[in-house]
Each structure stands twice: as C-alpha cells, then as structure tokens.
Image 1 (spheres, rainbow, N blue to C red):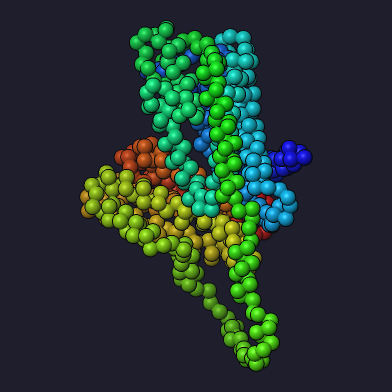
Image 2: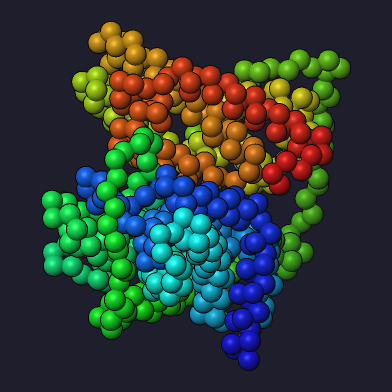
Length: 519
C-alpha cells in the first residue's frame, strides 16, 4: 500500500510538472544542447585540440558530460518549487489531513524530481543515438553509448533531485537565497573532483574526472605530445582538429560501486529533508489567530463599547495622478524588509568601488550588482507572488503608470549602489567604462522587469542573472554590460534595455486585455 501511494504521488506530481511552461523551456534547452553536440559546436577535447572519433563510446561520453554539466546546474531550478506550490495552493493543508508521513512525502517529491530530470536524460540519449547514426564513424553500439548515461548521469540527477527537495524543506533555502546558494555550491563541488590527487571517485559527482582521465589516456596513446587535461566548451571559431579513437570505460565494480553510492546518498538527502519538513504545520497561524480573537467570556463580562462614528473623506471630483508618489511607493517596496546589515554591506561595496583602481572598480561593481539579485528579482511579478493583481491593476492605466515607476525605482537603487564605480571612472576619465556603467544601470532593471512580467516568477531572472554575472566576472566580453573588460558592447545593452522595457509593457498590456502570454 505504501509503494502504491508513493507511485501515484510521484506520478501525479510528474504529470503536473510536464504541463508547465518551465518544463517546455527546459525541454527546448535540452534539444538545443543535443543540436550543439551533433553539429560539433559543443565539444570535448584534450589540449591543445585533440578530439575523439565520433563512435558510440565518444558520443555517450559527450552526452553524459553535457547532462551532468548543464542539467546538474540548471535542472535544479527546473524541479525546485514543487513543495512551495503545495504551500501556496493550499494542497499542503489537504495532505496534512491524510496519513501520508513526512518521509513518504519527501521521497515522493524526490522521485518526481528524478523522473523529470530522467526524462531529459532520455531525450539527450535519443539525440546521441541519432548523432551516432548520422555522423558516426562506426556502427552504433547501444551499450557503449548508454552506459555512461545510466551509471554517471542518472546518479548525478538523483542527487540534484534530492537537493531540490532538501532546499525546499529548509525554510531559509526555499526562496531566492537558496537558488543563489545552489549556484555557487555546484561550482565549488566541481573543484575537488578535478584537483584531488589521487583520484577520489566519491568527490566526482559529475563524472568529469572519470571520463576526462580516460579520454586523456586515449589521446596520449596516439599523440604522446598531448597534454594531460580535459576541456568541455562551446567552439566559436574553426580550429584544426586531430582525432583519436576512444573505446569508452570498462565498467568494473570499483567504478560502479561509487556511482551507485550516489543514489543511496540521494535517498539519504531525501530522508534528511523529511526531518526539516513541517508537514504544512499551521499551529503558528492558529496560535496567532487565537491571540487576536477576543475571549467570549471576557467580552460578555465587560461593558458594551459603543462603535466609533466613522466618516469617510470624499475624494475630489477630479484627482490628478502623481507619478512622484507612485515612484516613492515602488522605491519603498523595493527596499522594504532588508535588515540593517544589508545596508552596511551595500555601503561597504560602494566605498570599495570608489577606493579601487578603475579596472578593479568594475569587478567590484559586478559583485555589487550581483548582491542586488534578490532585491531585483521581484520586479514585474510581485503582484502575482502576493496575489495583489486585482488591487494594483484596477488603478488607471497600470501599464503606463505603474510599470515605469517600478523600473525607475530599480534604476535608482541600481545607480546608487553603483555610484562608487561611476565616480571612480569619472575621476579617471575612463569614458568607455562610464558608458558600460550606464548600459548596465539601464539593462539590469529592464531584464528583471521583462522576465518578471513574462514569467510571473522570480526564478528565471535569478538563474539567468547569476549565470550572466558569473560569466562577466570570468571576463566574457560579449556578455559584459558592466565594463569588466575593455571590449564591452555597451551600445548593444543600452539598446537592449529599451527593447526589454517595451517588451515588458507589451506583455503586461496583453495580459490585462485577457491574453495568455506565457501563462
């Protein structure tokens, strides 16, 4: 009976997720990754540029690294949110009245998460089979292609699925802060697997080192001058390639046992999540209501209190709209809820920008604007999050009035927290970085507002923005709207800021007229 309940719970949750827009977005991303792999734009190589022949073991390794890198990173954000939806929709209160135990609920959510990520792995597996049939230099060997996906990718997805449940049951990791924590946690988890000597399989969750060492050994057999390393990257320019045969991994017990151990770790994380899960406990709310409800006995013993004579002040016949008042209200909502230490850290970052050299000031500016991620991620979706749409959008011209006020409030905070870098560049006479600063101050609130209006969620902006800033901090000129590099295409992001603002206005207007845009 328990297994049947678990199966039906995971099944229902899986089907509910596959009907969501976010699932279609991730599905499109997976298909795109498969296309990049098939066309050679996404490659594995041994430095300087040795690539394996397109046979089944090589395709299986390529698809496995693609899965563990991209789905291990962004798949977390796809599956995270199921427990939160049960809180928000009231389904949790219904579940709380059933005999369903906390461990059973947590494991059911884990199985549902794992099923969603597993479906993505199957799609990439099919893309790998098609790649081998069309571009392969050898006949299809189904076992050699699918084995690394089964023994490396799926255990990695099991751990990611369990971490998503754990983060949702820990209250302070449930929201946007948890999304940022996982982003950096995943990056830091890659380092021990690469650098630990001798190789420790239990530190290699993604299997990068396991696959990379075998590929490097295969390359050295043919090209002794090749380096002992491994690269996985998107190729943007044609490069002379030297090929070598790769015969895959021999799946011995020493390799399989650590990979299967990751599945047990995933089950343990799901069980740990059950310890933090409050089973939709509403006792705090009930206690608060009890305190606010007057005691009937005490009320009956007291003297009747006459009701106050309330007069409503009539509104004038013609009341003018005041944009300044709306702007101040949006500014207060943007800054509301932050503790004193948040302002202290923000002030310290501004001082660090001002006191640093021009090059370092841009780096510190990027960190400062990343610090604002949770503040900006509510733009455009605050009404959906707090269910105040009917109140906010009943005002006259909500698109023309409220949307620009929200954007201007975000731009103000963005500019204030970046004012140290602005003054630094101004004092140094660095016009190129001043232009980049302007493009960033305009682009960031536009991006947040457009994604918030389009998706009615914080998550897309948080995921995209933290990834974007990470790439900027690693000096990626085409993505640089901050000025970390001297080749920043500031003009493109300045133009994009106004395009995104127009897109947000169009989407909001469409929604208010009854459109179903990205709902």
